[in-house]
Length: 262
Image (tube, rainbow, N blue to C red; front, side, top):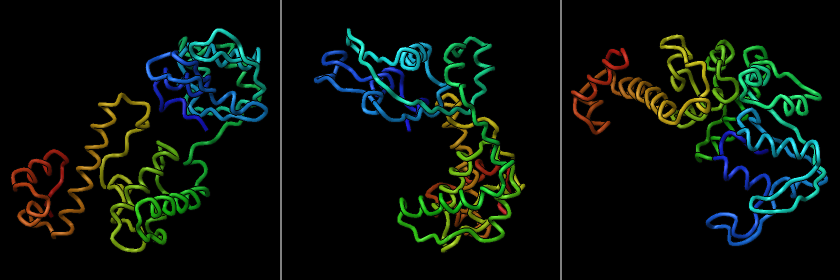
C-alpha cells in the first residue's frame, strides 16, 4: 500500500511515477516508480483524498490513458495497473470544494465499498485489539499476552471517533505502559474510562504538525502524571524525585490538566 498522506508531494510523485537521472538534486540514476513495478498487477493507494491537484491529474492519466511519465522524463510509458484506493475523507464533499477532481472521483468510484466506522463494527474490536497487542509487543520486546476482560469491555464501550488509527495508538501506548503480562484499565487513557475529556474527533494526520504534536504532548503529560502519582500513592515529593523535576513542576502540571494528587 502507498500512504498518499504521509509523503511530501515531490517524494510521493517520484515514488509513484519514478524519475529520470538528473531530474532533481540527488537523482543520480533513473528509477522506475511503483506504477511501473505494479505493471500487470494491482496497486493500493491509501488516503487518495490527500493527493495534490498535480498528482490527481497524473493519476487520472494512468486510469484513462494507461500511461505514466517519470519526473524529469519526456516520454510516456505504458502501464496496465488495477488501482484500488481508500480514504477517510468525503470525496464528494471535497469535490464540491474544488479540492478533488470530479473526473478522477468518477474514475475511482466505479465500485465503492463503504466501510462503517469502528463504533458500528464492535465485533471487530477484540480481533483488532489483539492484533495490535501482538504487533507492539513484538516491536517493543515486551511479553504482553493479551487484554483483561475489564479492559476489553472499555474498548467495546468506547465510540472510537478516530476509528482504527485511534485504537492502534491506544494499544501502542498501553503496551508501553503495561507492567504485567496483560493490558489492564490502569494502562488505558483516562478518557477511555470516562474520567477525562473525550479524545478529539479529528485524527492526528488531519492536523497541522504543530497542533498534532501539542495534542499528543498534552495526552502524554496527563497519562504520565496519572501513572506517576498512582505509583507513588499521591506523594508529590516522591513523584517529583522519580520524574527528575521539582515539586512546583508537578503542581503546575496537575493544575494544567485539572488533576489532584489524590
